[in-house]
Image 1 (cartoon, chains in turn yellow, purple):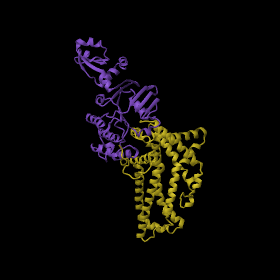
Image 2 (tube, chains in turn green, red):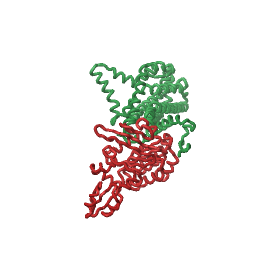
Image 3 (tube, chains in turn cyan, yellow):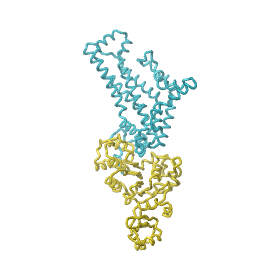
Image 4 (cartoon, one colour):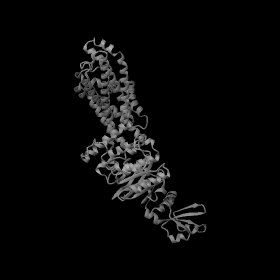
Length: 308
Length: 290
């Protein structure tokens, strides 16, 4: 009854010539990720709002910009660059933090919301495996959000640069030079930072997905309280804080393993990237093992658990 | 071809036994009604067939094990759990895109033409649709899938009479053909009576009655007995007796029609009447089976 033309929807992303086996593997994945974006528009709306707020803040700051820039240009080259780049770094950090928060809350709801509203019965009536579903949900914080953050940060910074250069030129001050504002290099550093951060935080997101597939309610409490309590128990019972420092290392340890940062935490040159050290850190691989175990458990739970 | 085959199907939730050794064999091309009181195990049986719950015993649906091969099975099986499971945030156009994207047997043109007969707008979100429209949307999606088995669990729950009638009409006219199988559970027994080819009564996790509609129609007769004939009628061993205004109604299994006609007005019982007869009195129910 099906004609081939009916089987292919309006998008041409999947070519018609793909063998059936390949179709069955990639198409459900592709559409599952798309459906996550339909459902969770905050994934890109929240970073966009933050970017817009940052841009309007920057717009206000251009009032005194020519005056401040003349003062900055009296400094040495390194300080010049630091001062000029500060608002750009600030905007990037805000958007990155937003992406992290959005990712955390996305994961906590990802396998919980579909059980709460019983829509899991609709999703399970379609030929999409639990593995595909869980992987498509895991790909949101690990792949999709970093890409969204990258695109929004680069676009925001480009807008900021064009805006400030225009204001400066109108006031007879020279625009930022490539030495003061190495746009391409900073984008590469950002991309490296996003990839390494996603790998470093993978066990956190996988843990949140696992809890969202397991807990019947209060997913945030179930995700956060147990690690917190275990750390407190260790401190009181044994007087040590191995667990606490492990958790802190997982949350914050990315910068110290992926970058050789100076005292001011600024990353200004490609020489500060330390991919060899990052890849040879046992913490990375242990974390990825945990992430794989958490995701495997989440796949099992997706099969076993029904509507709440 | 055998569509569903179960042997000794069991399932317990804690100490509550939901399925207590169910044997089932459903041939291709049947419309089977699974009928039972609340808590009889209907939904558990469907969930086992759909790979939504693990079970003990043997179960093959279209030759597959539903629990381990749910995603492959769902290429050939469709189900509507009840009217409330379509995600409320989803747009109608998204639903079409998504099902077309993941389902190799989905005929988008057919779904579009089914939707065109309704008042459902493509840009609407599910939460903006009435309950009846959500059921129409779900049915349009499901009927556009070239599946071998369609499972409906209380599909018309909460719908008004017009939507309910329309639901089964379009299912029969636009969807069913002899190569498909439909398994439906419902409490609205009267409205599926003319639709079904087979009936299956389930109670406390066991199959208590298994009949084709031909058997049902040829075996069971109901007589409105005049008061002076009640004793004579009771002597013919009815399987159930109920009092109505102005007389007794007795239900007979495999009785002689001529003989009954002498006692009162003979008529064909509804499935609901047989259901009450079989479920209402556990002792007599044993006699009703075979």
